Image 1: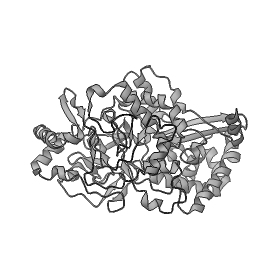
Image 2 (image 1 turned 60 degrees about the horizontal axis):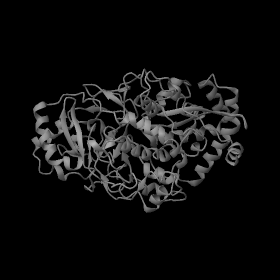
Image 3 (image 1 turned 90 degrees about the vertical axis):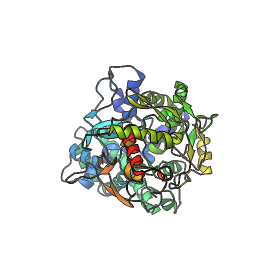
Image 4 (image 1 turned 60 degrees about the vertical axis):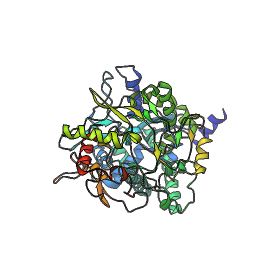
Length: 529
């Protein structure tokens, strides 16, 4: 009763993602898991999450349009704005489960979950939006010419163009401008959403706008900007800094912006069930188990998958701003999503592969790669992982992310409501990932500092600066490309690998003694994974 009274007094509102109500033709966990993965909210649609990550959607959308496209207030303009940040609006999800029926069309863009929250006392109606799994983990498919098809997406592949830093800064600037002109902002909301109810209009005007104005003033007063850290660059996140923020560890910290640069490239999710610990440093492991242990096919049990799902549920704390208790309540949903994730395969490599070189490259891979990245057996469907060592160590790459998790943060996570499902440690190492879907994962290394496999293998110099975002793929070099006449589908930026957290050095030793022909052969084989 006490909590209910408190919720009423503060006007707490929660919602469920509208698209989760979509009927499916199949009742298999895999089909339901795909729906949850692509469109689920995991408890992130409430006014508590709006303190950090979630937003009052119609107000935020109108502010973006008012700021960036005032001459064309329309849903088409909103989609163009969001697409410029790297969000996707697919006409087709290519690897949607067979037999599940057609997936729903995103209400805004793929990766932003929307839900309508309502309560009678006080009278509130509010559509809430929050980032979901597919924002980071869905990518365009690519054709034989390396050109992307952003309207045909592949779930589970890393989104190479999602620029959370630009989105965060753009939304902040738009809301700052919007609260300075509240009447114009509300008029834009009505034009953008002509079916806006009077109750939601009143909620936005009387309940939301004053709180947004207060929040904007408080952010401005800190002098730190919208966040005390940067999210990095397209296709990357800064999850450890976001977790520290949720645990109150960055408050009044003037050095956070320069120190918290542990950027990590979004990984491909194919074969992630082979991991014995999660995150780039293996910081999260199931309690009572060896953090880094060899995995065989027999170890891929439902129990192991559910252990990883419980850990994954905690990812919603930094990414969606939910509480540890809320994350725990949604573990069953994440378990269902994992039923789909365990079936995810990469898009087959769309370019040409030299078969002779690929055979030779497999021999090179077996000599120098399997000890860290696992054993792949040849099957009728191509190479398949059959043994994974879960090796962790240091290979000369940028240490910023390995050092980012502190003992203070470890203690906070282990003491959280999810502590019984996660054994957290500051390993100071990097966990070698499976290489399944490697060709879809440019740029490379844990911090996304190398734009192609050719550069990683030493077939060409690793550039100090390169362009990233909305790019095509060079399928020969396996990396980022901007062909003559190509128009990026999202805003591109220049990555400067001389900046903190983005050092491009490391992982050279395995290739040091290889001939150029061996490196070319290895490149051909890696295209097949």
